[in-house]
Image (cartoon, rainbow, N blue to C red; front, side, top):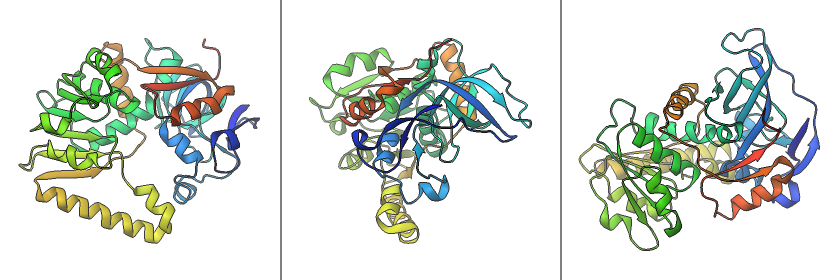
Length: 345
């Protein structure tokens, strides 16, 4: 099968190669998906550069040659004997967590917990833009901040960087659940975010969001750095404000210090952040991607109801994966960058 492979860490131009690899074999509790599309997430090009090089080999068995990519969108072509929920020919979307075998390939192995039925109203390319984003946002807003379809109505939620893949989905999810959303973006994306449903869109080039926003129930930080303190300042300080961030040193600390010292460093930093936030009456948490079939199914229903739409910036062929990575690393893409693999059915 045609795959985008790295044999070492480095720049996209230096290490990303298109090669023929053997089609993977499945176990009794796995399925083989013929991929029609995938997408580029920031974790993909960061991993390619060596981010997570200490922890990923330990927890996911990463070995070279390594196929990157997380998003799955395609048709089931083989089903293990223990699988009851899916059959050959089903259209699915999701994320794979199979060790050492990513989604930048014509075929990918998944488990039953990795995928859900593809929303019928979406093309494979559109569906490929969503799974990793869905599962990441779900961990941040549901698992960490405690939001859900039943308790979000009337809540005030701030989403940092609303025009990116994470932000644009998070804005739509909160609006679908009846919440009030404020977000930030650059000047040329204000109109698009209003179209996606954001109640208050702040052009960060013209206005400081921390000076005009206050009393928010939940904040999702996607940029971090010096903005973290500003984002904390706009939350409720009465013990009912929730701050969750996707920008934290978890993997970097392992990379810099090894597993044992890195783990201790992470624990110390996290507990210190929580203590400081608690003193302000705020709940503080780090969020990460976690596979979640429940989230995929729930969002598929919202998509079919017209409450959530994919936000795609552009598309590349798998043979153009180097250009796709380089484009994403410029930090200028808004929405998702999709990778076409097979001609859609």
